[in-house]
Length: 139
Image (cartoon, rainbow, N blue to C red; front, side, top):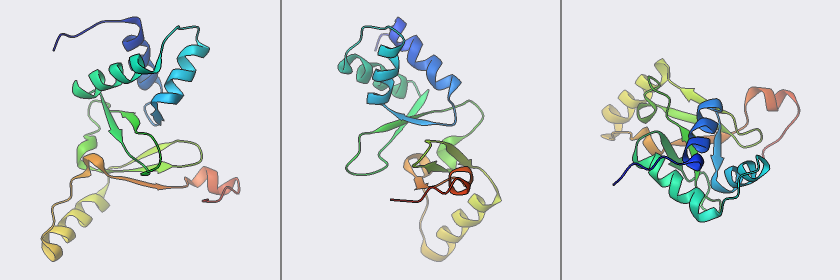
């Protein structure tokens, strides 16, 4: 597949690089692009997201069967496919669960359940500490 360089693709990649700890949907990106004065349609946003995902620069997740696919930036060195992510449903913040807990749970699942965890599509949804302090609640 030819690697297309476009203002839209550049804008989207730049957005992800500047919001590396967020997960966003195509519709949110479309709205932000239009707010920035870009004349773009939904199909073009999806096409560029697909290209960036195929290139391994972003990763898509389905956080809820009823919601649209959401995307996060795959920052070099974060090794995102090998750890879980925590997603705050209120503010959209992403926390990389890249700690000793991941090794422990992966070993437990393999040893006690014969199960190898694929973290590539695994996101735990809830509320971050900041949102809980503000009194937000899960709906």
